[in-house]
Image (cartoon, rainbow, N blue to C red):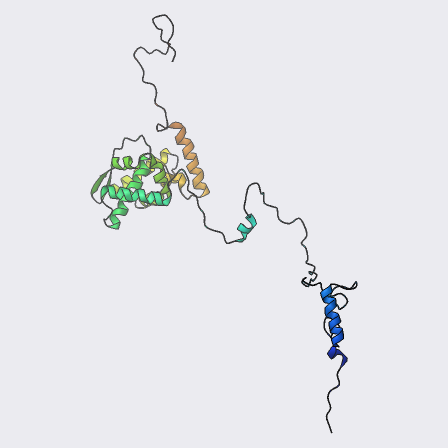
Length: 287
């Protein structure tokens, strides 16, 4: 049985774009002329009677995209921000912080404390001795405060060594409150330790605890004696503790003068009676 060639089907000579446009060389030339000359007829532009124009890309209709409903997010006030706020929110958040004006930041306070160690020549001593010096400094602040008008009397006693407090006050100067506020939580830890090691048979431990309790009662903080220091409002506190600290400030501040910010009075002169002086012509001397 002889095998012949398979019959040529009509769809084998068909073009996907132009139907039977490529069936014969004549129709192929006619289709090329139509394509080069522009769109012929009133077709859609995708067939042999309306091929795409020369030099123009093939255009397709974009699919319909579902739209949201409602008014959407509140727009950003462009008067306030001159950048893309939504893009900034979409990117990973970066770390930020700010320093508080009433206290030193951690780096500045650390530099100042190290400068105090260097001033007394203990920066290379054993860590236990340096830590004991810091505890004595913080406890001195708790029982004496950080007023700029202090006379600077007193001393720190650490492992049998006496350190005068006056050079410390002079070194800190007007930054005393800001310095101790930076160590407010550490001062609380020292005060808690003083109260915890109270021993009536140990004169030194009993004296320390008594001094701290005295300051706490004077400030109305007998419930929280470890918060008796001036910088306690800079601590990490519970609501109950913070209310007590605020109440103690209302109790102490109105009854004390802020001599650091007070303007000095005019030096009184001999003969001052509060009445205006009269000059030689009989008039009054007005300032």
